[in-house]
Length: 384
Image (cartoon, rainbow, N blue to C red; front, top):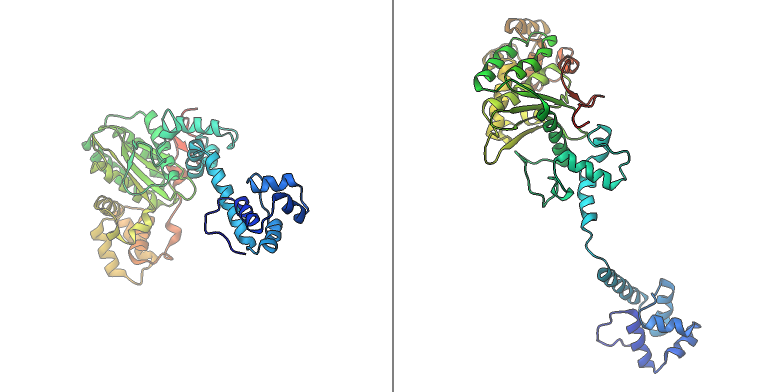
């Protein structure tokens, strides 16, 4: 059967054209198909859809493929839906917020006071409170939201949520006034703590007295955050740490890295302050050429703080590749530092990660003693 060249917008229009070519009425078609005439009228008028079975019958009757009838029906249904359907901005908003942020984890951590994650209105209200905005469409993870926080490098919604929790806690903390001289003085005091893991319990007090807010927030799953440095204002630096790796070498390296950001005043800009968010520092240490200049300087300062570079260079040159435990422990005693710091440097600089791992002692339980803690089973008393 020949199909007219004109465009058919519905299967009914095609059927009507074929009836005209045959000289049939709709009543004739109803008799041939053994269908109610009212049903045929609705079919031709586009008020009744063609299914797969009927398309095969029409194929036999008119010699037009069943696929063609079904394609017309599909296109017609889609166009009808487009006319009726309106752009649901609230649904799109929910997709960004609920789909982007780790809502369930934020509820479990006590960051959002919602009993049921499916209570969308309650979730949106709590998110506004958490991010400090009036309306959900102002939350910073949204593509069109006016960004108040500029983060150096890319940042994921879970990482941004962690950052805001650090900021919440930092805002409620009281410290002495900050000055660059106090930061340098703090460095000397911290250096005196490196010989014993137990001394790490004094870190928080030393930085607080120096005007630096030190915040510990457990990382969210898959966030891979190690630390952050930002400024609440020109005189209020903040260091946030996730203590993601519970090892003495990682703790001191990350802390000193963030402290160098403070000393260098990285991100401190009256017009456009920037958050220095450090993600997966250990991986980036493997390729120092791939990091920005600020990060390279902070990494070098951190490594030199853990074990002075010249001394570490000399030790590796003399002892590599046959490092002995006796030599390593003797070297750490000479440097007045814990052996775990030497081991950490040996690992990163030689790739011999199997060596002396027993010296990488856990330190988180010591560091968190007497501080405001968010995570590891505790909820910081912020906004509660």
